[in-house]
Each structure stands twice: as C-alpha cells, then as structure tokens.
Length: 125
Image 1 (cartoon, rainbow, N blue to C red):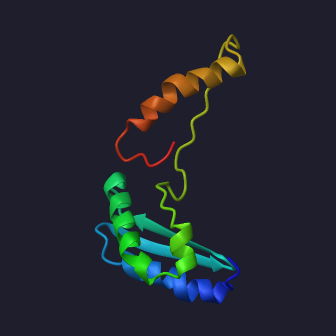
Image 2 (cartoon, rainbow, N blue to C red; image 1 turned 30 degrees about the vertical axis):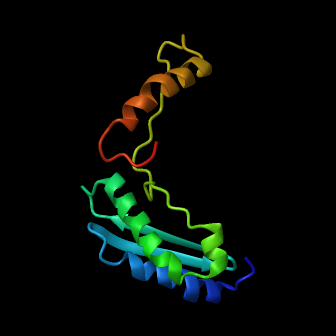
C-alpha cells in the first residue's frame, strides 16, 4: 500500500518473476505493476497439469517471500488457478420453452458444472 508503480515493479513484480523461471511447463510470464498492486500471470504449455503447476507456483512464491518487502509478506501473496482466456462458453436453452430460466440455472448448477469440473485440465468453471 502506498508504493509507486515503479517501486512495486522493482521490489515485488521483478522478484516474483525471477522466481518463476524454470518451473516445468512454463510458457510465458506477463505482469503489471500499479501503485500498491502487482499482478503476475503465468501461462503453461498445453498438457501441463494445472494442479501441479499451481503447487509449483506456490512453492516458488514461498521461496521469494523472504526477498519481498515486509508489508507484502504480512499481506500475503495470492495464487489462483484460472484460464487466462476462457475458451468455451456453454448456453442452455429450452427448445420447447417448457423449462424456465430458473430450472435451466438449477440444471446447470447441479448437473453441468459438476461434470465440467471433473474433466482433466479444467482450471476454473
């Protein structure tokens, strides 16, 4: 909090980026630094296990933490697993018009989403 974009870049973003090099399956690192905030996005080659990649990233963040400013260590570094750009959208329709939007939403939440979450390689649904 309160750090300039340049300070965030030099003392947080660059440190995290450096630690990420060498992670198996690493394809790219993209980052942005703003006043008080850093975002580092890491892309992996197709076929990389997303859960293992997330564990590897968390391990590298842990290695970087002693090098980060105290205020960042206290606040923590958040690691999330997500697709950089969703590549599939699913729409449910009632061809006969007999299912309401609520019924379709319930079906999606109770049936479709759990099925999609079980598919290998799915990062976030």
